Length: 228
Ligand SMILES: *Cc1c(COP(=O)(O)O)cnc(C)c1O
Image 1: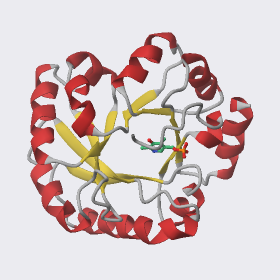
Image 2: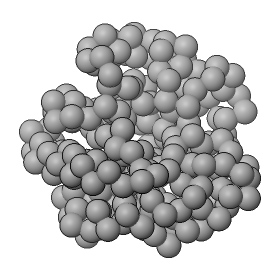
Image 3: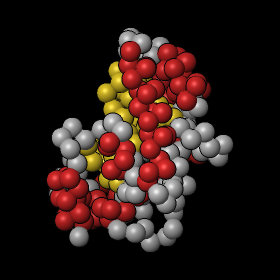
Image 4: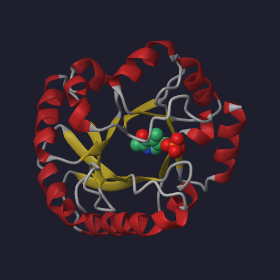
């Protein structure tokens, strides 16, 4: 089924929109099948999931970290894992960015990052508040071993995908605003938004990376919500 699901999604997504497989709890075999079917980006939330699968996935892909930095940074900020990830999509704090920058300098490596926006201003969610995003972007641009390449948002997990539209729109507006500032050492290239239930709306609102788990791999066995 994974192969068929990926092929259908690739056919459906407009040109220029990349499909990222959100792979939490999935096995190496499942991930390998998704890559062979055409997925080029694998998103992992947990270092423990990465550990379980990374060595066994033989087909090359780009690996993105999409988990909560606050709880995962202890593991993530090790050379071994920083070498594996091509992008961290969930950066939302200058303090963590400084630690990340230092570690990346010691590899040495320049890490592509997205700034995560808490577009619905949900107190329990991670991400920088929309009104603080520009200031964070300017500060991050001063770090030599981090390169901001865009924005990411989760948006609220509503039953009705239309309810996510305003939050995708806010994020896209910020994306354009930050782009227009022409900050050195920063580009607004990627806008990562939309999951299984909301990716169509996200694409309409300008997403060029969609992060999809369920619609590729099927329902998750344990009821892990996004980013728990
Ligand atoms: C799990 C997850 C997704 C995908 O969720 P689905 O509803 O299964 O498509 C996307 N983004 C993040 C950050 C996630 O943790």
